[in-house]
Image (cartoon, rainbow, N blue to C red; front, top):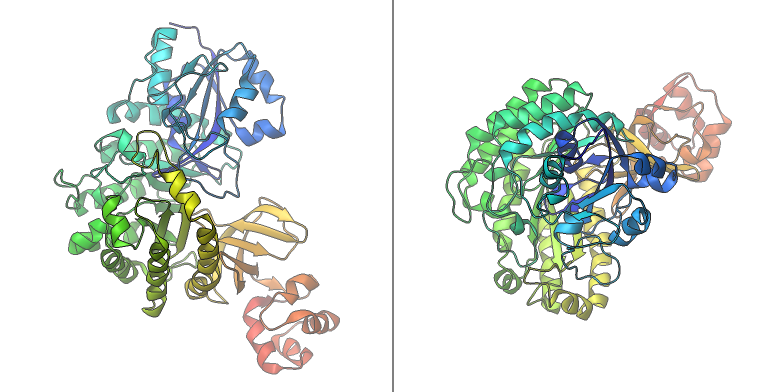
Length: 557
Protein backbone atom coordinates (compact mmCIF):
# COMPACT_ATOMS: atom_id res chain seq x y z
CA UNK A 1 0.00 0.00 0.00
CA UNK A 2 1.63 3.29 -1.10
CA UNK A 3 2.08 6.15 1.35
CA UNK A 4 -0.18 8.93 0.04
CA UNK A 5 -0.52 12.08 2.10
CA UNK A 6 -1.09 14.54 -0.77
CA UNK A 7 -2.62 14.04 -4.22
CA UNK A 8 -3.05 16.49 -7.08
CA UNK A 9 -6.00 16.01 -9.42
CA UNK A 10 -5.47 17.77 -12.75
CA UNK A 11 -8.75 18.20 -14.63
CA UNK A 12 -8.16 18.34 -18.39
CA UNK A 13 -11.96 18.35 -18.92
CA UNK A 14 -14.25 15.77 -20.46
CA UNK A 15 -17.07 15.92 -22.98
CA UNK A 16 -18.91 12.69 -23.78
CA UNK A 17 -22.34 11.83 -25.19
CA UNK A 18 -23.63 11.67 -21.62
CA UNK A 19 -21.22 13.71 -19.52
CA UNK A 20 -19.92 17.29 -19.63
CA UNK A 21 -17.05 18.53 -17.53
CA UNK A 22 -15.84 21.77 -19.15
CA UNK A 23 -16.11 24.85 -16.88
CA UNK A 24 -18.38 26.01 -15.43
CA UNK A 25 -19.34 22.30 -15.35
CA UNK A 26 -17.55 19.87 -13.06
CA UNK A 27 -17.76 16.23 -14.11
CA UNK A 28 -18.25 13.43 -11.59
CA UNK A 29 -14.82 11.88 -12.36
CA UNK A 30 -12.60 14.19 -10.27
CA UNK A 31 -15.08 14.10 -7.40
CA UNK A 32 -15.24 10.30 -7.44
CA UNK A 33 -11.45 10.12 -7.57
CA UNK A 34 -11.14 12.49 -4.61
CA UNK A 35 -13.50 10.24 -2.69
CA UNK A 36 -11.12 7.28 -3.03
CA UNK A 37 -8.10 9.14 -1.69
CA UNK A 38 -6.62 9.54 1.79
CA UNK A 39 -4.95 12.71 2.96
CA UNK A 40 -4.96 16.11 1.28
CA UNK A 41 -6.33 16.47 -2.23
CA UNK A 42 -5.50 19.50 -4.39
CA UNK A 43 -7.66 20.11 -7.46
CA UNK A 44 -6.55 22.19 -10.45
CA UNK A 45 -7.90 22.63 -13.96
CA UNK A 46 -5.76 22.53 -17.09
CA UNK A 47 -6.52 26.22 -17.70
CA UNK A 48 -5.18 27.10 -14.25
CA UNK A 49 -1.97 25.24 -15.04
CA UNK A 50 -1.66 26.94 -18.44
CA UNK A 51 -1.86 30.34 -16.76
CA UNK A 52 0.23 29.53 -13.69
CA UNK A 53 3.13 27.13 -14.20
CA UNK A 54 4.00 27.33 -10.51
CA UNK A 55 1.27 24.69 -10.07
CA UNK A 56 3.85 22.25 -11.45
CA UNK A 57 5.63 22.59 -8.10
CA UNK A 58 2.54 21.26 -6.32
CA UNK A 59 2.49 18.37 -8.79
CA UNK A 60 6.18 17.61 -8.30
CA UNK A 61 5.86 17.63 -4.51
CA UNK A 62 2.72 15.45 -4.42
CA UNK A 63 2.73 11.72 -3.71
CA UNK A 64 0.31 11.04 -6.55
CA UNK A 65 -1.01 12.91 -9.59
CA UNK A 66 -4.27 11.93 -11.26
CA UNK A 67 -4.96 13.46 -14.67
CA UNK A 68 -8.46 13.26 -16.16
CA UNK A 69 -9.34 14.26 -19.71
CA UNK A 70 -11.03 13.31 -22.98
CA UNK A 71 -13.47 14.59 -25.58
CA UNK A 72 -15.63 12.15 -27.54
CA UNK A 73 -18.14 14.81 -28.61
CA UNK A 74 -16.58 17.88 -30.25
CA UNK A 75 -17.83 21.24 -29.05
CA UNK A 76 -17.04 24.92 -28.75
CA UNK A 77 -16.42 26.10 -25.21
CA UNK A 78 -16.41 29.51 -23.56
CA UNK A 79 -15.37 28.44 -20.08
CA UNK A 80 -12.27 26.38 -20.87
CA UNK A 81 -10.24 24.51 -23.48
CA UNK A 82 -9.97 20.72 -23.10
CA UNK A 83 -6.49 19.23 -22.93
CA UNK A 84 -5.16 16.90 -25.60
CA UNK A 85 -3.11 13.82 -24.85
CA UNK A 86 -0.06 15.41 -26.47
CA UNK A 87 -0.35 18.49 -24.27
CA UNK A 88 -0.69 16.40 -21.13
CA UNK A 89 2.30 14.27 -22.06
CA UNK A 90 4.41 17.39 -22.60
CA UNK A 91 3.39 18.82 -19.23
CA UNK A 92 3.97 15.59 -17.29
CA UNK A 93 7.19 14.49 -19.00
CA UNK A 94 10.11 14.18 -16.61
CA UNK A 95 8.04 14.57 -13.42
CA UNK A 96 8.94 11.71 -11.07
CA UNK A 97 5.71 11.77 -9.06
CA UNK A 98 3.54 8.70 -9.71
CA UNK A 99 1.10 9.79 -12.43
CA UNK A 100 -2.17 8.11 -13.44
CA UNK A 101 -4.00 9.11 -16.63
CA UNK A 102 -7.70 8.40 -17.00
CA UNK A 103 -11.07 9.37 -18.40
CA UNK A 104 -12.23 9.17 -22.02
CA UNK A 105 -8.73 10.07 -23.22
CA UNK A 106 -7.42 6.65 -22.17
CA UNK A 107 -10.64 4.64 -22.42
CA UNK A 108 -11.41 5.65 -26.01
CA UNK A 109 -8.41 7.61 -27.27
CA UNK A 110 -10.36 10.84 -26.96
CA UNK A 111 -8.63 14.18 -27.20
CA UNK A 112 -5.77 13.22 -29.53
CA UNK A 113 -4.24 15.65 -32.01
CA UNK A 114 -3.88 15.04 -35.72
CA UNK A 115 -6.62 13.07 -37.47
CA UNK A 116 -10.18 12.46 -36.43
CA UNK A 117 -10.05 8.70 -35.77
CA UNK A 118 -8.91 7.82 -32.25
CA UNK A 119 -7.54 4.53 -30.95
CA UNK A 120 -7.50 3.31 -27.39
CA UNK A 121 -4.38 4.35 -25.49
CA UNK A 122 -2.75 1.52 -23.55
CA UNK A 123 0.58 3.08 -22.62
CA UNK A 124 2.22 6.47 -22.35
CA UNK A 125 5.81 7.29 -21.50
CA UNK A 126 4.73 10.32 -19.45
CA UNK A 127 2.37 8.34 -17.19
CA UNK A 128 3.02 5.43 -14.86
CA UNK A 129 -0.50 4.02 -15.18
CA UNK A 130 -2.95 4.51 -18.04
CA UNK A 131 -6.46 3.72 -16.82
CA UNK A 132 -8.20 1.89 -19.64
CA UNK A 133 -10.95 1.13 -17.14
CA UNK A 134 -12.70 3.56 -14.79
CA UNK A 135 -10.27 6.13 -13.45
CA UNK A 136 -11.93 6.24 -10.02
CA UNK A 137 -11.70 2.45 -9.67
CA UNK A 138 -8.08 2.42 -10.86
CA UNK A 139 -7.12 5.10 -8.33
CA UNK A 140 -8.94 3.20 -5.56
CA UNK A 141 -6.99 0.09 -6.60
CA UNK A 142 -3.70 1.98 -6.56
CA UNK A 143 -4.41 3.24 -3.04
CA UNK A 144 -4.77 -0.41 -1.95
CA UNK A 145 -2.33 -2.29 -4.19
CA UNK A 146 0.09 0.26 -5.60
CA UNK A 147 1.50 -0.45 -9.04
CA UNK A 148 -0.09 -3.92 -9.04
CA UNK A 149 -3.49 -2.33 -9.75
CA UNK A 150 -5.44 -3.60 -12.75
CA UNK A 151 -5.65 -0.63 -15.18
CA UNK A 152 -8.81 -2.06 -16.74
CA UNK A 153 -10.80 -2.38 -13.49
CA UNK A 154 -14.41 -1.13 -13.51
CA UNK A 155 -16.40 0.40 -10.70
CA UNK A 156 -19.96 -0.26 -9.57
CA UNK A 157 -22.80 2.05 -8.58
CA UNK A 158 -22.41 0.78 -5.00
CA UNK A 159 -18.76 1.88 -4.87
CA UNK A 160 -19.38 5.38 -6.18
CA UNK A 161 -22.13 5.84 -3.58
CA UNK A 162 -19.32 6.26 -1.04
CA UNK A 163 -16.80 7.99 -3.28
CA UNK A 164 -19.22 10.64 -4.51
CA UNK A 165 -20.04 11.79 -0.97
CA UNK A 166 -16.44 11.84 0.24
CA UNK A 167 -15.25 13.51 -2.93
CA UNK A 168 -17.52 16.53 -2.49
CA UNK A 169 -14.72 18.09 -0.40
CA UNK A 170 -12.82 19.29 -3.49
CA UNK A 171 -15.70 21.28 -5.01
CA UNK A 172 -14.74 24.64 -3.40
CA UNK A 173 -11.37 24.40 -5.19
CA UNK A 174 -13.00 24.72 -8.62
CA UNK A 175 -11.99 28.10 -10.11
CA UNK A 176 -15.63 29.03 -10.86
CA UNK A 177 -16.93 28.10 -7.39
CA UNK A 178 -19.60 28.79 -6.22
CA UNK A 179 -20.83 29.27 -9.80
CA UNK A 180 -20.03 25.68 -10.72
CA UNK A 181 -22.51 23.26 -12.29
CA UNK A 182 -22.29 19.84 -10.67
CA UNK A 183 -22.79 17.12 -13.29
CA UNK A 184 -24.66 14.26 -11.60
CA UNK A 185 -24.86 10.63 -12.64
CA UNK A 186 -28.10 8.64 -12.45
CA UNK A 187 -26.76 5.77 -14.54
CA UNK A 188 -24.43 5.13 -17.43
CA UNK A 189 -24.50 2.60 -20.19
CA UNK A 190 -27.28 2.18 -22.72
CA UNK A 191 -30.30 -0.07 -23.21
CA UNK A 192 -29.78 0.12 -26.97
CA UNK A 193 -26.01 0.23 -27.31
CA UNK A 194 -26.05 -0.03 -31.09
CA UNK A 195 -25.85 3.49 -32.55
CA UNK A 196 -22.99 3.24 -35.03
CA UNK A 197 -20.83 6.08 -33.69
CA UNK A 198 -21.52 6.26 -29.95
CA UNK A 199 -19.02 5.39 -27.20
CA UNK A 200 -21.67 5.08 -24.47
CA UNK A 201 -22.19 1.42 -25.37
CA UNK A 202 -18.70 0.60 -24.04
CA UNK A 203 -20.08 1.13 -20.53
CA UNK A 204 -22.44 -1.82 -21.02
CA UNK A 205 -26.01 -2.14 -19.82
CA UNK A 206 -27.38 0.51 -17.42
CA UNK A 207 -26.28 0.29 -13.81
CA UNK A 208 -28.75 2.51 -11.95
CA UNK A 209 -27.80 4.52 -8.90
CA UNK A 210 -30.54 4.36 -6.24
CA UNK A 211 -32.31 7.61 -5.36
CA UNK A 212 -30.90 7.67 -1.77
CA UNK A 213 -27.34 7.48 -3.17
CA UNK A 214 -27.89 10.38 -5.55
CA UNK A 215 -29.63 12.41 -2.84
CA UNK A 216 -26.74 11.76 -0.45
CA UNK A 217 -24.26 13.04 -3.03
CA UNK A 218 -26.35 16.15 -3.68
CA UNK A 219 -26.62 16.74 0.06
CA UNK A 220 -22.84 16.52 0.47
CA UNK A 221 -22.28 18.90 -2.46
CA UNK A 222 -24.93 21.27 -1.13
CA UNK A 223 -23.24 21.29 2.29
CA UNK A 224 -20.02 22.35 0.55
CA UNK A 225 -21.83 25.30 -1.05
CA UNK A 226 -22.85 23.87 -4.43
CA UNK A 227 -26.14 25.29 -5.73
CA UNK A 228 -26.11 24.36 -9.42
CA UNK A 229 -26.90 20.80 -10.51
CA UNK A 230 -27.51 18.91 -13.73
CA UNK A 231 -28.63 15.31 -14.15
CA UNK A 232 -26.37 14.84 -17.14
CA UNK A 233 -24.63 11.51 -16.74
CA UNK A 234 -27.15 9.27 -18.49
CA UNK A 235 -28.12 8.71 -22.14
CA UNK A 236 -31.86 9.02 -21.44
CA UNK A 237 -33.33 10.50 -18.24
CA UNK A 238 -36.72 9.00 -19.09
CA UNK A 239 -35.40 5.46 -18.67
CA UNK A 240 -33.95 5.96 -15.19
CA UNK A 241 -35.09 2.89 -13.23
CA UNK A 242 -37.10 1.87 -16.31
CA UNK A 243 -39.37 -1.16 -16.25
CA UNK A 244 -38.00 -3.86 -18.52
CA UNK A 245 -34.78 -4.54 -20.35
CA UNK A 246 -35.73 -4.14 -24.00
CA UNK A 247 -34.26 -1.62 -26.45
CA UNK A 248 -36.90 0.97 -25.55
CA UNK A 249 -37.99 0.19 -21.97
CA UNK A 250 -41.13 1.72 -20.51
CA UNK A 251 -40.42 4.84 -18.38
CA UNK A 252 -40.89 4.67 -14.62
CA UNK A 253 -42.55 8.01 -13.71
CA UNK A 254 -42.71 7.19 -9.98
CA UNK A 255 -38.94 6.66 -9.79
CA UNK A 256 -38.22 9.96 -11.50
CA UNK A 257 -40.66 11.77 -9.19
CA UNK A 258 -38.77 10.28 -6.22
CA UNK A 259 -35.46 11.32 -7.77
CA UNK A 260 -36.39 14.95 -8.35
CA UNK A 261 -38.31 15.41 -5.11
CA UNK A 262 -35.45 13.74 -3.23
CA UNK A 263 -32.94 16.21 -4.65
CA UNK A 264 -35.18 19.15 -3.80
CA UNK A 265 -35.58 17.90 -0.25
CA UNK A 266 -31.82 17.85 0.47
CA UNK A 267 -31.04 21.01 -1.54
CA UNK A 268 -34.01 23.29 -0.85
CA UNK A 269 -32.28 26.53 -1.92
CA UNK A 270 -30.60 25.25 -5.06
CA UNK A 271 -30.32 27.77 -7.89
CA UNK A 272 -30.41 25.39 -10.87
CA UNK A 273 -31.65 21.84 -11.38
CA UNK A 274 -31.44 20.81 -15.02
CA UNK A 275 -31.19 17.66 -17.11
CA UNK A 276 -29.44 16.62 -20.30
CA UNK A 277 -30.23 13.68 -22.55
CA UNK A 278 -33.66 12.34 -23.43
CA UNK A 279 -34.36 9.76 -26.13
CA UNK A 280 -37.08 10.99 -28.51
CA UNK A 281 -37.79 7.36 -29.37
CA UNK A 282 -38.80 6.71 -25.75
CA UNK A 283 -41.19 9.68 -25.73
CA UNK A 284 -42.74 8.69 -29.07
CA UNK A 285 -43.30 5.09 -27.97
CA UNK A 286 -44.59 5.88 -24.48
CA UNK A 287 -46.28 9.30 -24.74
CA UNK A 288 -48.42 9.06 -21.59
CA UNK A 289 -45.67 7.79 -19.31
CA UNK A 290 -43.34 10.39 -20.81
CA UNK A 291 -45.83 13.16 -20.11
CA UNK A 292 -45.89 12.10 -16.46
CA UNK A 293 -42.10 12.13 -16.32
CA UNK A 294 -41.86 15.54 -17.97
CA UNK A 295 -44.49 16.98 -15.62
CA UNK A 296 -42.45 15.77 -12.62
CA UNK A 297 -39.34 17.37 -14.07
CA UNK A 298 -41.08 20.70 -14.68
CA UNK A 299 -42.60 20.56 -11.19
CA UNK A 300 -39.24 20.23 -9.43
CA UNK A 301 -36.59 21.64 -11.77
CA UNK A 302 -35.64 25.25 -12.55
CA UNK A 303 -36.64 26.88 -15.82
CA UNK A 304 -34.40 27.18 -18.87
CA UNK A 305 -33.98 23.40 -18.91
CA UNK A 306 -33.12 21.46 -22.09
CA UNK A 307 -33.91 17.88 -23.07
CA UNK A 308 -31.14 17.07 -25.55
CA UNK A 309 -32.42 14.78 -28.30
CA UNK A 310 -29.78 12.75 -30.11
CA UNK A 311 -31.70 12.81 -33.38
CA UNK A 312 -28.53 12.55 -35.52
CA UNK A 313 -30.37 12.42 -38.88
CA UNK A 314 -33.73 12.98 -40.56
CA UNK A 315 -32.76 10.66 -43.43
CA UNK A 316 -34.60 7.30 -42.99
CA UNK A 317 -31.83 5.50 -44.91
CA UNK A 318 -29.11 6.84 -42.59
CA UNK A 319 -31.26 6.08 -39.55
CA UNK A 320 -31.64 2.43 -40.56
CA UNK A 321 -27.99 1.86 -41.51
CA UNK A 322 -26.71 3.40 -38.25
CA UNK A 323 -29.36 1.98 -35.88
CA UNK A 324 -30.38 5.46 -34.73
CA UNK A 325 -33.04 6.15 -32.14
CA UNK A 326 -36.07 7.48 -34.00
CA UNK A 327 -37.58 8.30 -37.38
CA UNK A 328 -38.26 11.99 -38.15
CA UNK A 329 -41.99 11.84 -37.35
CA UNK A 330 -41.24 10.17 -34.02
CA UNK A 331 -38.78 12.94 -33.16
CA UNK A 332 -41.38 15.53 -34.11
CA UNK A 333 -43.97 13.81 -31.90
CA UNK A 334 -41.48 14.00 -29.03
CA UNK A 335 -40.83 17.70 -29.72
CA UNK A 336 -44.56 18.37 -29.65
CA UNK A 337 -44.93 16.67 -26.27
CA UNK A 338 -41.99 18.54 -24.70
CA UNK A 339 -43.36 21.83 -26.05
CA UNK A 340 -46.78 20.97 -24.60
CA UNK A 341 -45.38 20.26 -21.11
CA UNK A 342 -42.47 22.69 -20.94
CA UNK A 343 -43.26 25.57 -23.28
CA UNK A 344 -44.41 28.11 -20.67
CA UNK A 345 -41.90 30.84 -19.78
CA UNK A 346 -40.35 30.44 -16.35
CA UNK A 347 -38.62 32.53 -13.72
CA UNK A 348 -35.23 32.42 -15.49
CA UNK A 349 -36.75 34.21 -18.48
CA UNK A 350 -36.57 31.13 -20.69
CA UNK A 351 -39.24 28.50 -21.31
CA UNK A 352 -39.40 25.84 -18.61
CA UNK A 353 -38.19 22.92 -20.74
CA UNK A 354 -37.48 22.71 -24.46
CA UNK A 355 -35.88 20.06 -26.66
CA UNK A 356 -32.40 20.41 -28.09
CA UNK A 357 -31.47 18.66 -31.35
CA UNK A 358 -28.14 17.03 -32.16
CA UNK A 359 -27.31 16.21 -35.78
CA UNK A 360 -24.29 14.11 -36.74
CA UNK A 361 -22.82 14.04 -40.24
CA UNK A 362 -20.45 11.54 -41.77
CA UNK A 363 -22.61 8.55 -40.86
CA UNK A 364 -22.99 5.50 -43.08
CA UNK A 365 -25.37 6.00 -45.99
CA UNK A 366 -25.10 9.78 -46.01
CA UNK A 367 -25.71 11.49 -49.36
CA UNK A 368 -26.55 14.99 -50.53
CA UNK A 369 -30.19 14.06 -49.89
CA UNK A 370 -29.39 13.70 -46.17
CA UNK A 371 -28.54 17.39 -45.91
CA UNK A 372 -31.74 18.37 -47.70
CA UNK A 373 -33.91 16.16 -45.47
CA UNK A 374 -32.32 17.51 -42.29
CA UNK A 375 -32.89 21.10 -43.38
CA UNK A 376 -36.48 20.42 -44.42
CA UNK A 377 -37.12 18.86 -41.02
CA UNK A 378 -35.94 22.02 -39.29
CA UNK A 379 -38.04 24.18 -41.60
CA UNK A 380 -41.09 22.10 -40.67
CA UNK A 381 -40.55 22.92 -36.98
CA UNK A 382 -40.71 26.63 -37.73
CA UNK A 383 -43.79 26.11 -39.89
CA UNK A 384 -45.54 24.33 -37.01
CA UNK A 385 -44.29 26.91 -34.48
CA UNK A 386 -42.48 24.24 -32.47
CA UNK A 387 -39.65 25.52 -30.29
CA UNK A 388 -36.25 23.93 -29.84
CA UNK A 389 -33.68 25.52 -27.59
CA UNK A 390 -30.54 24.34 -29.39
CA UNK A 391 -29.53 22.85 -32.74
CA UNK A 392 -26.11 21.23 -32.66
CA UNK A 393 -24.63 20.23 -36.03
CA UNK A 394 -21.34 18.34 -36.04
CA UNK A 395 -19.30 15.78 -37.93
CA UNK A 396 -18.79 12.32 -36.52
CA UNK A 397 -15.73 11.47 -34.41
CA UNK A 398 -14.82 7.87 -35.30
CA UNK A 399 -13.58 5.80 -32.36
CA UNK A 400 -11.98 2.40 -32.26
CA UNK A 401 -14.59 -0.29 -31.62
CA UNK A 402 -17.48 1.60 -33.22
CA UNK A 403 -18.91 0.90 -36.68
CA UNK A 404 -17.66 4.30 -37.80
CA UNK A 405 -14.00 3.65 -36.98
CA UNK A 406 -12.93 2.82 -40.54
CA UNK A 407 -15.37 4.84 -42.63
CA UNK A 408 -16.41 7.93 -40.66
CA UNK A 409 -13.48 10.14 -41.62
CA UNK A 410 -13.82 9.21 -45.30
CA UNK A 411 -17.56 10.00 -45.42
CA UNK A 412 -17.10 13.26 -43.52
CA UNK A 413 -14.36 14.41 -45.91
CA UNK A 414 -16.48 13.50 -48.93
CA UNK A 415 -19.17 15.98 -47.90
CA UNK A 416 -16.96 18.55 -46.20
CA UNK A 417 -17.85 21.42 -48.54
CA UNK A 418 -21.57 20.66 -48.42
CA UNK A 419 -21.43 20.35 -44.64
CA UNK A 420 -20.02 23.82 -44.01
CA UNK A 421 -22.44 25.57 -46.40
CA UNK A 422 -25.37 23.64 -44.94
CA UNK A 423 -24.33 24.47 -41.38
CA UNK A 424 -24.15 28.18 -42.18
CA UNK A 425 -27.59 28.00 -43.82
CA UNK A 426 -29.02 26.51 -40.62
CA UNK A 427 -27.39 29.21 -38.51
CA UNK A 428 -28.69 32.01 -40.72
CA UNK A 429 -32.21 30.82 -41.52
CA UNK A 430 -33.20 28.41 -38.72
CA UNK A 431 -31.24 29.34 -35.58
CA UNK A 432 -31.86 33.06 -35.92
CA UNK A 433 -35.63 32.71 -36.32
CA UNK A 434 -35.83 30.11 -33.56
CA UNK A 435 -33.96 32.38 -31.12
CA UNK A 436 -36.35 35.23 -31.88
CA UNK A 437 -39.22 32.97 -30.84
CA UNK A 438 -37.56 31.47 -27.76
CA UNK A 439 -36.32 34.81 -26.36
CA UNK A 440 -38.10 37.74 -28.07
CA UNK A 441 -36.79 41.30 -27.77
CA UNK A 442 -37.66 42.58 -24.31
CA UNK A 443 -37.31 39.18 -22.60
CA UNK A 444 -35.78 39.52 -19.15
CA UNK A 445 -32.99 36.96 -18.65
CA UNK A 446 -32.10 36.40 -15.00
CA UNK A 447 -28.65 35.84 -13.48
CA UNK A 448 -26.30 36.12 -16.44
CA UNK A 449 -22.71 35.56 -15.32
CA UNK A 450 -19.95 37.31 -17.26
CA UNK A 451 -17.23 34.92 -18.46
CA UNK A 452 -15.28 36.90 -21.05
CA UNK A 453 -14.62 40.51 -21.99
CA UNK A 454 -13.62 41.66 -25.48
CA UNK A 455 -13.20 45.40 -25.83
CA UNK A 456 -16.39 47.16 -24.75
CA UNK A 457 -18.52 44.01 -24.87
CA UNK A 458 -18.87 41.47 -22.06
CA UNK A 459 -20.00 37.93 -22.82
CA UNK A 460 -21.82 35.79 -20.32
CA UNK A 461 -24.25 32.96 -19.82
CA UNK A 462 -26.70 31.73 -17.29
CA UNK A 463 -25.47 28.68 -15.42
CA UNK A 464 -27.72 26.26 -17.21
CA UNK A 465 -28.00 23.25 -19.45
CA UNK A 466 -26.86 24.54 -22.88
CA UNK A 467 -27.02 28.21 -21.84
CA UNK A 468 -27.46 31.04 -24.30
CA UNK A 469 -24.43 33.18 -25.04
CA UNK A 470 -25.31 36.78 -24.14
CA UNK A 471 -23.29 39.71 -25.43
CA UNK A 472 -23.69 42.86 -23.33
CA UNK A 473 -22.27 46.17 -24.64
CA UNK A 474 -21.48 47.57 -21.20
CA UNK A 475 -18.53 47.93 -18.84
CA UNK A 476 -18.92 44.71 -16.85
CA UNK A 477 -16.18 42.71 -15.17
CA UNK A 478 -15.67 38.98 -15.60
CA UNK A 479 -17.52 37.25 -12.78
CA UNK A 480 -20.27 39.87 -12.49
CA UNK A 481 -23.81 38.43 -12.30
CA UNK A 482 -26.63 40.60 -13.64
CA UNK A 483 -30.15 40.48 -15.04
CA UNK A 484 -30.39 41.56 -18.68
CA UNK A 485 -33.06 42.37 -21.28
CA UNK A 486 -32.81 41.09 -24.84
CA UNK A 487 -32.34 43.80 -27.50
CA UNK A 488 -31.34 41.80 -30.61
CA UNK A 489 -30.44 38.35 -31.91
CA UNK A 490 -27.48 36.69 -33.60
CA UNK A 491 -27.41 33.27 -35.23
CA UNK A 492 -26.61 31.47 -31.96
CA UNK A 493 -26.43 34.26 -29.41
CA UNK A 494 -28.31 37.30 -28.21
CA UNK A 495 -27.43 40.89 -27.35
CA UNK A 496 -28.86 42.28 -24.14
CA UNK A 497 -28.45 45.27 -21.85
CA UNK A 498 -28.25 45.32 -18.05
CA UNK A 499 -31.67 45.50 -16.42
CA UNK A 500 -32.77 47.84 -15.12
CA UNK A 501 -30.59 50.13 -17.26
CA UNK A 502 -29.61 53.42 -15.65
CA UNK A 503 -30.37 55.79 -18.52
CA UNK A 504 -28.44 58.59 -16.85
CA UNK A 505 -25.14 56.71 -16.74
CA UNK A 506 -25.33 54.12 -19.53
CA UNK A 507 -22.58 54.37 -22.16
CA UNK A 508 -23.32 55.53 -25.69
CA UNK A 509 -22.56 52.02 -26.96
CA UNK A 510 -25.12 50.56 -24.57
CA UNK A 511 -27.75 53.11 -25.58
CA UNK A 512 -27.04 52.49 -29.29
CA UNK A 513 -27.79 48.80 -28.87
CA UNK A 514 -31.37 49.43 -27.70
CA UNK A 515 -34.12 48.53 -30.18
CA UNK A 516 -34.61 51.18 -32.92
CA UNK A 517 -32.16 53.60 -31.29
CA UNK A 518 -28.82 53.65 -33.15
CA UNK A 519 -26.12 56.32 -32.96
CA UNK A 520 -28.23 59.41 -33.63
CA UNK A 521 -30.94 58.71 -31.05
CA UNK A 522 -28.37 57.48 -28.53
CA UNK A 523 -26.58 60.83 -28.86
CA UNK A 524 -29.86 62.68 -28.28
CA UNK A 525 -30.60 60.57 -25.20
CA UNK A 526 -27.15 61.25 -23.79
CA UNK A 527 -27.29 64.99 -24.55
CA UNK A 528 -30.52 65.48 -22.56
CA UNK A 529 -29.39 63.73 -19.39
CA UNK A 530 -30.15 63.63 -16.52
CA UNK A 531 -33.68 62.26 -16.60
CA UNK A 532 -35.95 62.04 -13.60
CA UNK A 533 -39.18 60.77 -15.17
CA UNK A 534 -40.26 58.65 -18.16
CA UNK A 535 -41.96 61.70 -19.64
CA UNK A 536 -38.61 63.45 -19.95
CA UNK A 537 -37.23 60.51 -21.96
CA UNK A 538 -40.21 60.64 -24.32
CA UNK A 539 -39.68 64.34 -24.82
CA UNK A 540 -36.01 63.90 -25.70
CA UNK A 541 -36.52 61.76 -28.82
CA UNK A 542 -37.98 62.58 -32.21
CA UNK A 543 -40.30 59.56 -32.20
CA UNK A 544 -42.57 59.19 -29.15
CA UNK A 545 -43.41 55.60 -30.13
CA UNK A 546 -39.74 54.59 -30.04
CA UNK A 547 -39.19 56.46 -26.78
CA UNK A 548 -42.20 54.81 -25.14
CA UNK A 549 -40.97 51.35 -26.19
CA UNK A 550 -37.72 52.01 -24.31
CA UNK A 551 -39.25 52.91 -20.97
CA UNK A 552 -39.43 49.29 -19.80
CA UNK A 553 -35.62 49.14 -19.99
CA UNK A 554 -34.83 52.19 -17.87
CA UNK A 555 -34.37 53.31 -14.32
CA UNK A 556 -33.43 56.84 -13.21
CA UNK A 557 -30.55 57.40 -10.79
